[in-house]
Image (cartoon, rainbow, N blue to C red; front, top):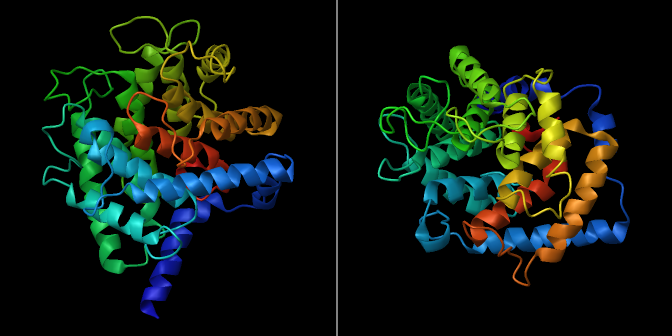
Length: 350
């Protein structure tokens, strides 16, 4: 009885902010489309998730091409499988999620880093791992694993705060290891991971978030494009889309920079067939989150067009082969996009 009560209190604390009188209205805002088209999308998702689960190694990890980035790939795959509605204890993909979570927990180091310091871009894996584990925490029924996840995330948040550069961003490694270098994409990964942790009840220093938001503002050009780094340069659509998602994750829905940033991204990412923006899958992974948060007719049109494109590009195996990191990365991110409307993950909820 005590465990049941504890789980009930935990769920109320974590998810109470998301349940409101508008819940039924939000459910009704799902993209309207023909049943045949919706069934095709669902079949594509199911096939992709099955393929993803089959790629998991016995150790519980997933990797990119050449066995690279195990922490980042495992975290993204856990998020994709969890978006379906499965947890570590229940659902079709529970065994795969549980093994993936156990692998991520095993990557936690005494200093708080989730991953290997020998990885030249370890902040990506660390940020995605925070995101994945934070989504798991609220639904975790095993008291011992929940306590372990909490401990790992508390130390992970501390590591991220200490890894922040003097400018307020993050680089591929910590500020200390990387001579205080920072860039936009890893900064977004850290902020989204921190926001997910805060949603799950993990204390996150306000100063860390405030410095990160100020960093994004300083990287934003007059036309709304966000630069690759604080050092300057032209705005990049994928990083700009990620920056908007980052500001939303930080709670700045009315940030004065967002309107011009949105206008900048719509000029390129608004056309899903525009491949000239670079890093197409990365860009739309974040742009889809932004558009979903926006909701309304704009989201419905975007999702319908994007879903048709993704379904059409899926391979016979269920995987997507496009992209520069490998099939696991592209398949995981595409599946997360296609499942945004499930609203199973707090970090992506409206």
